Image (cartoon, rainbow, N blue to C red; front, side):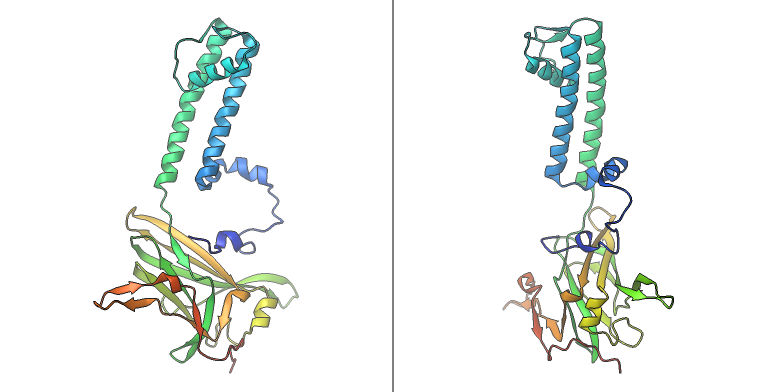
Amino acid sequence: MGSHRTGSQRLTLATRTKSTSVDGSERYFTDFYHHLLTSSWPFLLFQIVGALAFANLLFALGYFFGGGVENARPGHFDDLFFFSVETMATIGYGKLSPVGLFANVLMSIEALFGMISLALMTGLIFSKFSRPTARVRFSRIAVVTPRDGVPSLMFRMANVRANQIVEAHIHVVLARQEVTAEGEDIRRFHDLTLARYRNAIFAYSWTAIHPIQPGSPFYGADLEALTASRAEVIVSLTGTDETFAQTIYARHSYDAADIVWGARFVDILTRTPTGEVVFDYSHFDEVELVAPAASTVASA
């Protein structure tokens, strides 16, 4: 999704807290497959290489203390290590071979371990390659500006992949701290009504518009109040990738400091002299002032 901040980076209040009772190591091992699948490619390859090196080291120690590897040079642990690599990968060059019951049993266990590991790694890498992901770009900021005479909160999105997202839906909520009648300080979520929440074919750009009318949590709000309540606009987008025919999603969030009042987005749609329509994404995050930068939406 580029270098912009996504919800997975910023939604600390909406999705998880620092006071969680499950420590990092427990999350790692109880959701190991998910951790590997969502790791970056360099980190995934680092973990695979590290795991294989550690496993070969353990088997090499077994051969070292159990003996029985023919043609291994005495005192050369590296011979045993690379014999373990050959066994696990079912290479078998023929120079080194196990001798004795213990070495042959250990070799059989390692060969089975190698076949299982190869199958698991193949499935993991295939799953990571085939997992569809959305490349949706969100504007770095949101704006509050009149639309058809009504103050509206707006942000825009772009599908930067050369395909279409079918039946795209967006859901937008405002999360903020509020005090209940009993004096309890809670995090409350308010759904924001959009002028259009569904896009049959999301191919290029899409501007989401929330009219700020009576009943809207933004009605009568100002920048100071939003900042004090730690307000955050949370956006989630789902749709079907036309290439994979599978559901994809993307998310983003804007806090009070990311909202520009009295401004509108610069138009990114241009036409060439031949009449061809061109989307200029170099101006995707640019805004222009349309009114004095008021930070309050009138409540009357």
